[in-house]
Amino acid sequence: MQRRFRISVDGQPYEVVVEEIADAGAPTAWPASVAVASAATVAAAAPVKVDAKAGDEVAPLAGTIQSIDVTPGQTVKVGDPIVVIEAMKMKTAVHAKGAGKVVAIAVKVGDAVDTGAVLVTIA
Image 1 (cartoon, one colour):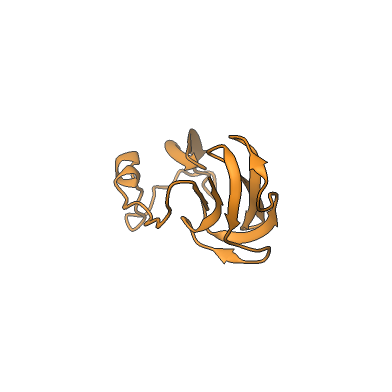
Image 2 (cartoon, helix red, strand yellow; image 1 turned 90 degrees about the vertical axis):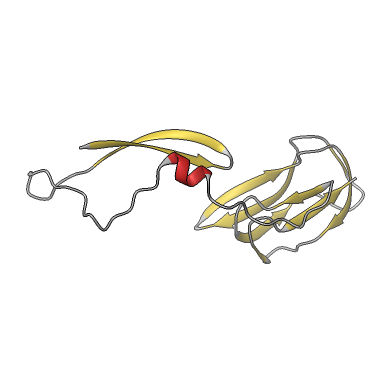
């Protein structure tokens, strides 16, 4: 049996098809105790509270800071890499959403951050 799901990775939506494979070649049903969230349920989930201000670049996911690719006073353009976060052995580059000068770096390599944590301030 195949089921279709919609997932979001770094805010980018993807549709995936998942096929259930039975052990002895016989099809099996999903246990009634398994809850499957619909796209509407996921979209209705409460947003993460962010205490960011204008110019703050925030962590898109919880993880550990692997590298900081900017320095205070550096000029950045939209899309420039600013920080790399590792979560579950996967590295995610965080890119500048705005252009300007880096006025503050709120994290250091090795810091654990939560989703929405302020990483860098650009003015």
